[in-house]
Image (cartoon, rainbow, N blue to C red):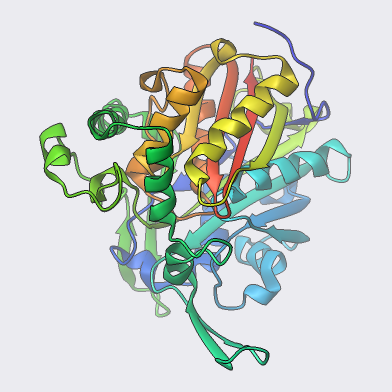
Length: 398
């Protein structure tokens, strides 16, 4: 394996000190009824307990969330209190890129020796998206009302276009074929259900009981609610909403949380479930492409990342991405001369859903678990975000 210097030589991701809830589709589970930040903090404490890691090990908390929740002003401190550990915290967001960026921020904090163990906790609830009322005194309409999730999905103030339009526009630019997109989507569903049947998801996904204020059971979150097996025949029969885009070849909004820890080299060995496994940060970049071309941005980010590190796609043992549209993968394959059938071997957000902030965190966790199963190597994780942004990161498992 080609050796590239780590970007954070003093920081590691201790194996197994991570976990995620399942991602039920929006409005489809009891998660639609709760304060998602409180749930995420309590869920993180639950996961750490099952991983045999004391909450007292944590010095700092990096919180990633993108959708307003009740009492969001208090952010990190209140989430840490819900976790049961009164530590300082910091909140950050950039749409779907939030998960990867939160992990990098935690790595930077530990690498600088500010903290020995930093927790990353990402969460969002698309269900019952809050509505904001904004005074606009310099506009003809003095009051603007915005549904945070759906109005932002449907309108980019920089271009005036919806996210779905960016997928169709980019598909036309790269002359992507609808038949290829349907075939790709069918494979992604097969990869997810094959991994599920093999028990792969049991390594990092946790079930949770959701209680009401009286402590009574509202429901149990024990699967990615809303995900059903889909055939190539069914995909071919669906109506195009834009070029190469159907309801079956795009992801769905969801609710959920995902968490992992970052620690110093010494502390990582102490709290890791398998101290012999070494997980390093190699490099990370963000880019921005042309207006309304979001699906091409991830590939550009990956190319920049490879140029900076001197690595190639052939050096990657695991390749995994956040793909809100199947066309993203087709474009990536075409621009990078890469076989899209080799990536997302254990599932991806196209299938299991898109709660925004935790999406790439779960992607990272899955990718690292896959790399461990394969005996180590370089792990490439990438995706797109609102505003024509592409993000990409490389980790090394040894």
